Length: 491
Image (tube, rainbow, N blue to C red; front, side, top):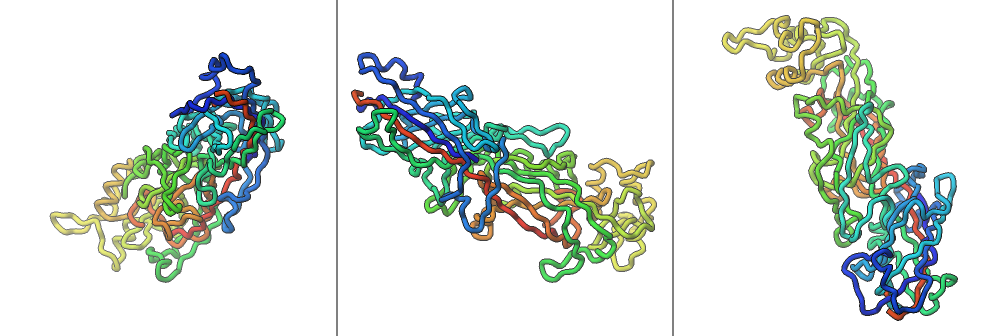
């Protein structure tokens, strides 16, 4: 998080000229023939640690987290000057333009003076100022969309990189939400006759930036309390949870990561509805299989510290950005085990460690019956459908067919899964009907309680002219991360 001053700017103005798209200094380098020689338009960027005054981060129910150096540092970007909805000038800032680079440990960073030129500026008129930080640029940033590319680390599949959130080059743009809802209207500049020298630049209001990305942190899931009794919605479906000695958190995976984002965040009127462009989901819901088959999705489970993602907003639970949590259930019983690796079953709401236990239980209807004779298939024969000669479970497709055919849960190695859709704490599904991920936010999931066994597979069943030069000075503030904490009980 940083504050940027766009310092000392002069503009060569041609009143009769307007542009439908942004022009830059290179485009206009030869437009001054016959005009009075001028120093040009200069600016410096001064960055310092910002406060959250007047931004989304200052909402009473929200807290803020400091950014890391990689998340806060700005070395490149593009400055824009807008006349209403028309961009009349843009200038790209490069790494070579910085006199003093910024970091989290060093509060300020200052650029060298940068010379640019511009046409179409009128004295006494108000202009909007925008800044797009990072390596990406656009001719129409207030209406443009960016497509983000995700890359999976081969050693840790949950270590997912996003090209719009690269270390030291996060894409950031003017904040646009209920507190600062028009982006550039809060950051404006008006040039007067007094602003003809670099020693008296026009002043621009602060530009508050948001990172285009959000961040999901690894869940706090290791200290959940196992609860074996409950009433109503908290009543466990499993009838003999007393057999569960303990549960142990293993790892997690993320799903439904949007591949598109607006450069400037979009809302409906009165900010009643948040709108995120829908791209192709990365690691979408179907990646994690269907009700009976994980389709090899377990390779996506790991322990990455955090993941940068793009905004997402949907009314459909299946399309919501979510976390899959993997736990291992360790049982107290050791007798009559079909497998030595902790694999067990759940059938008709009860836990079993062998098919024979189901066979001997008079309270349930034994599922393994010969279709022609109606005679029960002996457990020792039935188990051969999924158990190989080495005493291991057969392939996943065979196991999936077994689950479906007999309506039985098979917890391979005792592993179980919970899927939790992320829900922004200031833009909750309960009041909006949308599951939303908002930019510049950190999503942290705290698992407090576990009421029941999870699913046996991740998606298992349930739940310018003659005008003189103008100069201007602007400040850009990078919002700190907004923290969105979600406490959940798993059931």
